[in-house]
Image 1 (cartoon, rainbow, N blue to C red):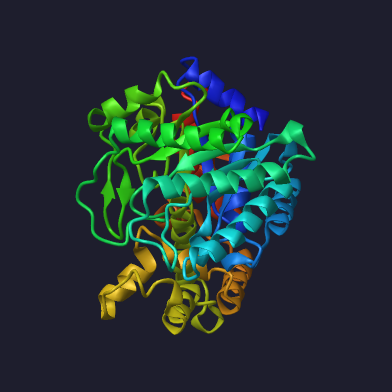
Image 2: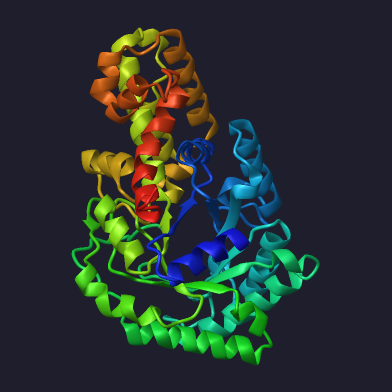
Length: 427
């Protein structure tokens, strides 16, 4: 993981550069990420899978770590992206997928998962044991969280011993609220105090060293904190640099470690740049890019309604809403409206729980038919301008064709532009 460590070292030496971490398993998002990087000549693409998406049981994607790696590398090969510029990461690796089990059982499964990630070549490992298991108190004591992180680090280190040159780098800590966006309405958000951030680092460092993990501690590159950014279903809490000034200053003297900012989705470009400047040098984005994917698909559905006979339409949007209502397991804990208000949340919530449904066979078939229809009846430019203005600009500039995949890639690329600008201010 020399590419990542070099970027972190440069940031610690005073360069206002950062790393975008794209957390998605959707093939069009990953393709858009590679194509965006090829256009912008960035030094690195970092793609991460979460413990719920990918684990030894398959996760909600059905993929184990080796399968996810092969899946990403196939897309890289198809787009012509060089593998020596690709880094894979594991996000929130811990017992999160098994919290219904007693802690000992959940942690045993988490150890297997972390080792599988490392053996599969994932070089950036976020150790997150902040969640309570079935027999744990709520909330979990800080020391227990750190002890469990050290336990998982031991499993990761053991898995990497056959290839010391590619030993993983680590991220510790977690943000509040839980991963993937807040489940409740938000107006303001408490920023992690500098004292709490440094205490987390001190506790993890001491426990790592007690466990004989000194070499691993030297490869800890970041800690996750709450800089005051978040989103709920319909609102975004914007970054306010003044509120995070003390936290930002606290990490400056800490060797080889920066902050990793989660839930940066939907932040303005100037806010993303300010985060990187303030040492939140790793910016995570997940729902933000799949939200852009959904925007593009809904726009293509609208264009289809304008250009394709009703008897031939794919009806993707209607199919998705119907399937979400028929299989509510991925949203019913989070969305509590009824009627038209529920339809609004299902489609447009910023938490974008629609992303769990794209692999559904009925939805995939409707998407394929939509693409076929729009390849047969190519969208005219005025409709692109109406429904997909970012893609319209790309088509006019010659950087995208009128193929539906190209139009979607251009829409996602507009979101990635803000991250690239924030992480590469001199590019």
